Amino acid sequence: MIHTLEADGVQLDFGLRRILSDVYLKCETGKISGLLGRNGQGKTCLMNIILGTLNSSSNSIRFDGNVTHKVSKRPDLLLYLPQFNFIPKELTVKKVLDDFKLHVADLENRFPEFKGRSDLKVNQLSGGQWRTLELYIVVKTPSLFAMLDEPFTHLNPIQIENIKQFLLEEKANKGFLITDHMYTHLLDISDTVYLLKDGRTHLTKTVEDLEELGYIRIGY
Amino acid sequence: MRTLKLIARFYRGIFLANFLVTLSCIGIVGYYGSHAHKLMGFLFWFKVITLGMIFSTAIYYQKKEMYYYQNLGVSKLKLGITTSVFDFLIWLFIIIIAYQ
Image (cartoon, rainbow over all chains, first blue to last red; front, side):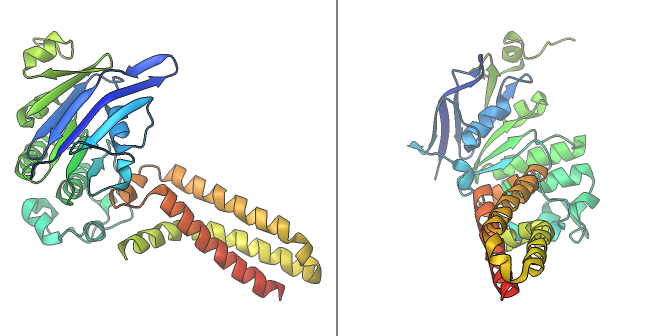
């Protein structure tokens, strides 16, 4: 079954400064939606508004057409990967997987670098492995959607390619909303790309669109 | 069951601080002996305020880890209410025993 997550009518002000004013986003099961934008344009704020952890003047967050508030209390609808490490560092890999009802063997099959590491605490893993584990639990735990904020941070190029492949495999099971500054990787895997600029979302397709909207400068 | 396990894990992190407060209350009750009942109002509010302060400090220093609990369906509110009520009941139980 195809599920949809839509966000629109989002208005966010910090004092006199308007951060978000004209936003429309749509995610669907089986698709990856990319969200690009310069620093300070409100990408993370938008994700927090969708999650319900940041209040905005107005918003309409809809799952399958139904307005839903406080999505953060519904991990069956939406899981969130923040841009920083969020797994408590004293937990072992095995304990983390156990909390999310996932199996060590499945992780080791998909990411062989974890073989024999399930008894290690997460702070004994490399930065890339720690991030990979976080991505794995957010992507593999059953939910309709997952929002990934800078998923490629801390990953080396090989790990990035592996994660891209993993996301493409897993998008059949859920819809993804991903934001990252590594726009080439995002363009590679996204079905739809939105650029957040001056509080508005712009639907983009190509690198040229991104250049036209001032997000990148080709040739520099 | 999983929720209880997560709440217990969070509580372990704040247990010592809360228990030290409870111990100090027992010390006060022991010191004042049969007159300790006059201080019950003070001890009650001392416990309630320190519970709030300890919980706030814990979530401030574990702000990032809160997303872990959130992704498992355990909100800050749920953590706060369950651990505070549980710890308060322990305090009440120990205070009653100490007073007797």
